[in-house]
Length: 233
Image (cartoon, rainbow, N blue to C red; front, side, top):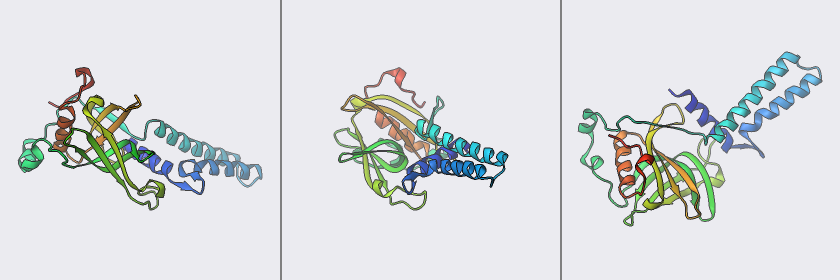
């Protein structure tokens, strides 16, 4: 269980949803203000008012720090990504071989997505990774309509994409991401956009076999310096 992952996920959900015009992660500020006013009016002991205000401000600070972190933590790993022999025996031949063009691999993706002229930052969005015949890579995320703290706000609902070509990749690393109860095997890469900006993308997986396959596909023709790639054994 990853406590920090739970905090990051909760902070992300609170930052994405609103109570009227106010994002939910800032709602504790209202409680802090109300506590101060009630205390001044004599309706609340000073010690209790101070405690409530401190707790509320601490919650807001935690959410702001999580936002600065991108709501996700990636920890590189030097250990092997190779699955156990038993896992390999249970895997199908299809899951062992190299990715073929247009084959979709289910992932959770974090990064800056685009559609038309809109850009959004999503964390651990349900997505598919694929490589086209041209060797261009694509991450396709489908954001569903929101229910309370679940799914995407209405403006974000729909399909969102990340596109990058092998020559744009400047760094590839393997490890695990912390977001939610359990850490997941993951790949972190950086690519340079057509505007010259370097953007990070995190892809996390349900199992090590798929992590290995996507890693091998990404590094196949990427122009990445050896020191910019930690690779599975």
